[in-house]
Amino acid sequence: CKKIRPLEYVINTASHHRVHHGRNRYCIDKNYAGVLIIWDRMFGTFEPENEEVVYGLTHPINSFEPIYIQTSHFMHMWRTFWSTEGLMNKLSVIIKGPGWSPGKPWHGEIEDIPDVKAPVEKYDPILPEWCKFYTFYHVILLTLFYTEMAEGQNVIPPLLLYGSIIYEIFSLSVLGIFLEARPYAAWMELLRCILYVAVDYYFIPWTRISLIDPFTKWLSWP
Image 1 (cartoon, one colour):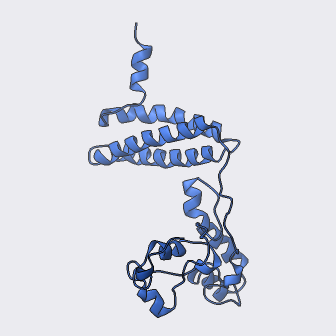
Image 2 (cartoon, rainbow, N blue to C red):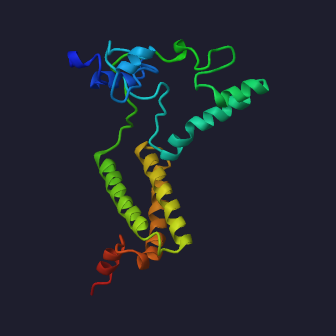
Image 3 (cartoon, rainbow, N blue to C red):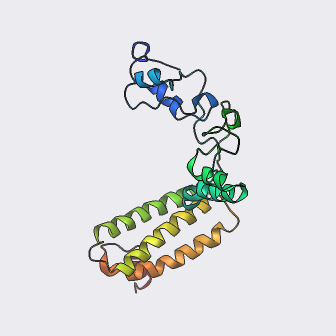
């Protein structure tokens, strides 16, 4: 890897920052510096880039579904909390590091972290190209929909606004499932599209756009 030799001792260079984001064992809890790497050198948290960095979480989530991504670690903590014996140990599950378990240091043992080496196979479900384009297109539509909500939040009735926000979150969740090629993804997407007709109908008076209005005009054309 390329390095800027004179600055490597002072500045948090790209090489140093790559280490900070790595999941290799030698990268864990290293190179915290924002600008000056001298602080990591002083406090013993510096690590040079010795081998190719593998990015990501030490225990990959392997999902595109945003709700699961945001809640997966809390679910892991919940299961660990109830499976751990002793009140103090249960409290330690909440307070101490994610690698902790009874009898181990506060942050756990470095040996418990998977020892990965590049290249590592990434989570990448096989999908037809049209599925990727379809998802990208609907993310753009949801972005426009969210922009309309943000701009009209002071005039849109609260019930309609909150319902639309729930629909946005639901849509992102369904599109994540769609990208994972789950067996029930097509049915979830069909439900989402049907729900959108209702959302669009009630949302039209408060926004400048409608995604179904052009189609209704086309159908009613003599």
